[in-house]
View (cartoon, rainbow, N blue to C red):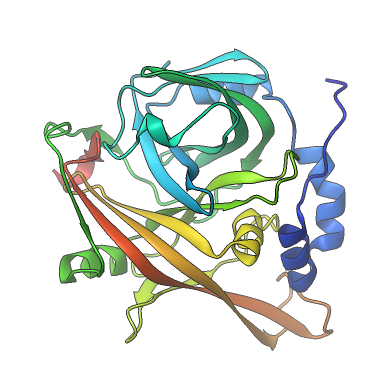
Length: 311
């Protein structure tokens, strides 16, 4: 493909990369790994999925994380630059009225058993009550780090869901969060420039059960583990701290959606060989994400799949 590439990173991503010490490496990696098209293996991957996580702008500054379902093939790669997604099956929170032609959308495909995941950030070029068509702006793979293996089976109660909205987390919500080994975060950055590195993004976060804690102020605290060094999510949060978290209760088929205000807390610790370092010699940067809930939504029987080995 001989297509001119737009800049890989926006200013928020560049600022985080510089602070974490990955900026020089990312200047070389970005143009090589972030494409404006889908290689054949990514096309095959997306068409094999039965679950697709998405992030989109619900309001100008508010993103939303959600999930779409279908039999393999519900995502079609009509070309190496276009996806056609059947949206007739979703968690119940996905509302077409929130989307319009020209909107940016983040897409994450993940297979928990093989620990494979690929991302697309794109623009909606067509939408109706059955599907959305997305043009690829950025396409890239992610490493298998922190993906917890899960095998799924159909949720027989899917479709008989109920939803409720509240301002604070309940005890049941807190139990789900503090026992989770996975959540998804939608973030976004828009400044009016029509560049490929703007728009909504959806990302996976994983770790050992309990990697998310809740402090006395009711804030969610998450250690940001070293990853690929792109810092797409943190770069967005630096520019726009409002984000959306999605916790899936795979045991019971429920889901929890939380709008949050975020803060990145930096710490410097003695250097460890092999770790990302910042510009201060002999120190390593560690990051903690602090999320303050703004709005909480509970979806009962909202997930089309449940964890197979717990039934």
